[in-house]
Length: 85
Image (cartoon, rainbow, N blue to C red; front, side):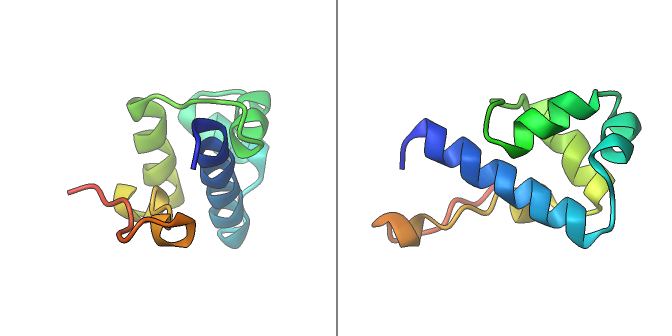
């Protein structure tokens, strides 16, 4: 899985979690001091977010970092998932 694919998968995960919580891009952006365009780009895989940005997202979506970045590497030929500890 290359960097572009990882960023797209992460963006899709953020989008799915945001929608599951019933939060708009604009509301999420405002709550973390970003623009709606920044959230739109992130969800499209066009942003390589900083650690701080990821922490803000997890906090506002009320999920752990581990849950937010749980990319299934097993589906791409790796034996384990990526986990933060």
